[in-house]
Image 1 (cartoon, one colour):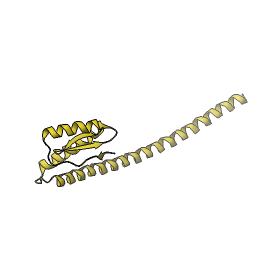
Image 2 (tube, rainbow, N blue to C red; image 1 turned 180 degrees about the vertical axis):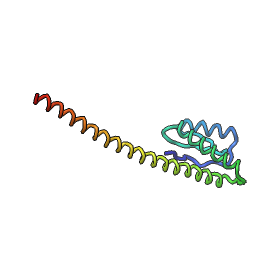
Image 3 (cartoon, helix red, strand yellow; image 1 turned 45 degrees about the horizontal axis):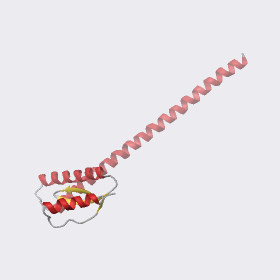
Length: 133
């Protein structure tokens, strides 16, 4: 889970931003930039947090490039809706694949049981023939 540590200050200078980023990194925070805003986040995997931030930033930029709105809150909500749509579609696809795999696994299991039964019967027949003869 990613947690936001601090809220953004009103547009710091480049020097202030560099000092703040260094201090944040020293404290273990991951500094990311999303849609021209710097966020200090904490989590267990900094590389993963960077990937998440890059995905959100790219989605927001793509939405703002294709839309008339410049309001960053609206762009963020539209990006969240797009990402949620992808997530739900992916979950539905996963569920369909899991159901297909469960059905296939059940069919294979039944087939193996049938084949095992047949082989056991044949083995018993051969053994009975040897005992009798």
